[in-house]
Image: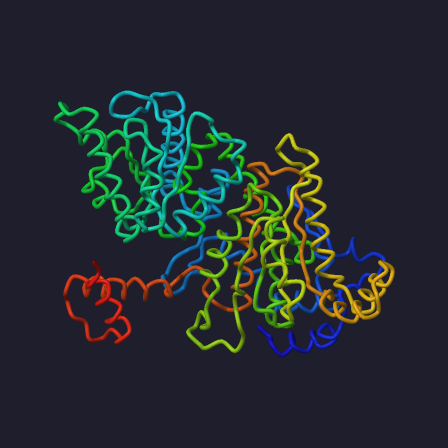
Length: 545
């Protein structure tokens, strides 16, 4: 990436007010765009047309068009692991699957999709039941990371499409308290379990899976003490999504209940595969297909649209602009929709795990910063929490506001106020309030000169905070698919410009390795490679009462 050109482009922007850009009468038309399911208003970004064109030139210079083609065509763009990155093909029509994957692998993918659909239909119709013949009332999905976040965010987002006869729960945290909380809600005879782990060795997932298995067998023995074949509860009620068939079968799961995973689908982009089984069980096959259709439509927009009108590319370039040109280290994700309350956490993983790196694809130390720190919360809650800092600290925090024009609840006035707050916050972050404005308002309110002097400075707000506003008509499966695909592609584009591999995550591994060492120390195996601090902490654990 041409960081010198980027820095040069930003010189005037660093001393410019965003509000001054609206002197251009056509700004809202020139700095907004639409796709079939989403509308993006980026007119409140601190960027003009010359600067945006310069960013597009930088993207062209690094070969972004070729990189997009390579991803969709199956080139091994995950160079450190020698893998293709083809989650997009999972939401494409069968003819595209055959073109990209070849006949044999495309048939394997199709077979997995049919198997998954058959499971969903079997549960819905009561053909698949628990070991005592009762219909399933609950699903417990066990996973972590990419095997968890995509399902979690989509379950809450598409709550209005859920099968009311089936409750779906997800568990990732290895904390036993979290597991106990889930199990209290479940009936052993009517709970379907899905374990999601590519290797079927992930520590947190397998600890939770073993604990749930033990709970289920124990409860089953109490329900049917005369039953000598209690393993049938695992055989009938457990399913797995994994590539390690041997480990799954050794665990006791029926081989007919195993769905595949492929190494060309990264965990945090895997919702579109059989990893999405818990979601499909919740919303049904038709709605799961609509989710994929919405994502596919965004794929086609991303793949074929000129950069100037390309929503993922524009959002990515604006992120580069804010991170590297204007030097803002954070990004706030503020969905003004209770259904999207899990989206900030989902994007923390997809963004920071993908691009939180400081070494290029070729192994060289980068001379620029990469992924921002992503955080957020649903509106309007955030307004009464961290948005105080956003308005009155010296930190500028670029923001993505996300809102649906139509709500799902009967409380239409509540939704009107919610949308108004969303629009108002983006305006307030941009406009701010000067000392002169504050003093004028206080004078009009009749305050004394002494009181005005005492409190005026405390009521100023810096403004000039850039934001995007993403608008949807209504949150539907198609819209949700488009929204998730939009951020996937945005993150990919930024990885290309930053010249990092967005699809490995070696930084996760060190903690896992040291976790094994710490566990050994807790079992009495002395490890002098651990710091005195860690050895002392282990000693405190061992000395617990």
